[in-house]
Every structure is written in structure tokens, then in C-alpha cells.
Image (cartoon, rainbow, N blue to C red; front, side, top):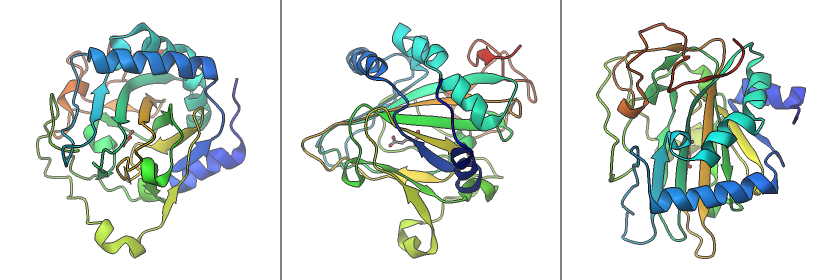
Length: 270
Ligand SMILES: O=C(O)CCC(=O)C(=O)O
């Protein structure tokens, strides 16, 4: 099993994001690449692709795809990612939150707007993270993610907004306790960022409250097939606050419940 170092865990705790190299083997990469093509050809019920900003390229988004495809199901449960999440959380239990695709085809200029994830999710608590991988090399000009260093500790909950003109589900209620995302691009020198280029097999690891975004895929020679899997640990509880993503709500859970349910299966622990 892949073992994280103390430095990895410290970077995740301090900065809200870190990178792990060479975690996902080529067999898994090939299987996920095939599963992505299946999802693009026949997306499941939570498809939320975005119109391209300028009519060029294509931005395919979809979530909870593990429930629709055996390969994603197997990967979320049996690839070693739950054990990796456990190492970051130092937790007894790990639950799957959900998985999601962000495929930017060559020449898709749509940026991924600055946001933090946990306001979109019906979860409170500290043990909430994402692993993000790409089946293609990722460079700044193909849409590498950028993270605002330390922003997970701001305890600021930014109002979810759509990532673009959408096809499919993706609408958000207003939550009066959320605040609008500041115009980070207009004050770029005021922020400290971390970002990395990735090779297939590498992972970004980031906290649910870390502010992040990405440019478009300006490359003509390369796709950016981003796939992310999110997990929770002991300190994570179902939260019915308004503003969260409707497809991520679980009718069977009440406010404050442990996450474990059909939608958020317990993978490690009892
Ligand atoms: O891949 C992207 O462009 C966005 C990814 C993202 O925001 C996330 O995984 O939370």
C-alpha cells in the first residue's frame, strides 16, 4: 500500500493541498480511461456538462458515477484510495463521499471558477478530502488545479455557483451564512498559491475547504481528463444546511447523523 510521508501529511494540514507522485498504476489508469469514454457516451443521471464558452471544445462533468459503472465502483472501493484517505485523516473510519469527472477536451477555454467544495456538500466536520488525478499530463496551460495556500483554515464558506452554462443538473439555493467568492484574479498578488504539473498516476490531495480553481485546457494536442474521488473520516457528519448540491443529498440521513448510508458507504471501519 502507498504510504504517505510526514511531510505529505504536514503539507496537507498546513497548506490544504499536496501532491503525491506515482500512486495510480497503469492498469487502473487504462481501466479508468475506458470507463470515462463509457460515461461520455452514456452519462448517468447526474450529468452536468458545461457549454463551452466560445463554442470550441467540450467540458464534460458528471458525479456519483461509481453508482453507474463497475470500474469506478471498484476504483473508489479497492484502489487503495480509502486507505490513503485514512492516513491523511488518521481516522478509524472512512466513507466514500462521491466521485466526479471534469474532462476538458483540447481547446476548451472554460476556466474552473475559484470555489471551495464543502459549501456544495451536505457535510460538516474536518475530515473531508479529495483526490484528483488526470489520465493526461497536466500543465498550467491544460488546466492544472491551483490552490490558495492555507485557505482551508479561513473557515470561510463561499456561496456555490455553477461552473458555466450547464447541461443537466446543477443549481444552488442561496445560504445567508455563505459569502460571495472574492475576485481572486483581480487581486492575485494578495494570495499565495500552490500548484503542480501532473503526470498520469499522480494525485492532488486537497481539503474540502481549500479554495481552488483552474484555467481552461488551451492545449490543442492533449485532453485533460480529470477524475476526482472524495472521502470523509471520523469527523464528518451529515448537514442539511441550504445551498448544497441537490444530487448529493441523502433522504435517509438527518442533520448530524454519521455519513454512512447507501449514497455514502462506509469503506473502512465499522
Ligand atoms: O477539474 C476541475 O477543473 C475542477 C476540479 C474541482 O474543482 C474539484 O475536484 O473539486
